[in-house]
Amino acid sequence: MISVSHCKNPRAVALIIRGASEHIIDELERAIHDALMVVSVVVRDHTIVAGGGAPEIELSLQLHSYASTVGGRIQIAIEAFAKALEIVPRAIAENAGLDPIDMIVALRAAHESGKRTFGLDVIEGKPVDMLKAGVVEPLRVKTQALSSAVEAAVMILRIDDVIASARSAGPQGGMPPGMG
Image 1 (cartoon, rainbow, N blue to C red):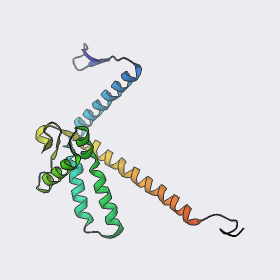
Image 2 (image 1 turned 180 degrees about the horizontal axis):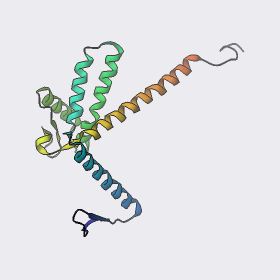
Image 3 (image 1 turned 180 degrees about the vertical axis):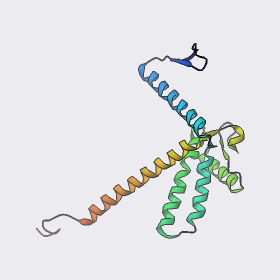
Image 4 (image 1 turned 45 degrees about the vertical axis):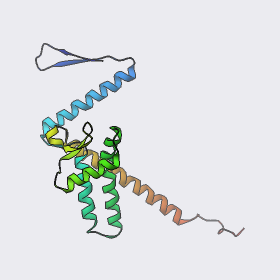
């Protein structure tokens, strides 16, 4: 339970968090802290993007379009990254109990027709203009999430390269296989 208490300072508010266990209280405190930090980022930066998976679908479509101009292995990597971006609207659809495939198709169609701020409205079960609906995210949070995802992917690829090169080097020393 969260209760709000006003202090003598007109700008200060005290939150009293109560819960059945320390774990619940810790989770509530963390969630409130995260929410306050997101609001502070918006207040400082004054930059937002549409929510509901709109930026991810738009980036995915732009990357698919760009990938077709590149060719080769790089094209495959770009297309894989574009497909990975669709995980966000897919998760939104699944969590809302909607068919993720139908929702991704509907979002793509909306964006391909120029509706770049359309995201998934989980109440209506269809793409709507997220800016008009008031569903927004701070740009800084979105770019940090994408940057972290890219860093994680690069790290996994580097580890995979190290493992692959270790395997291709073969056994160190000793007799060749079958000689013994």
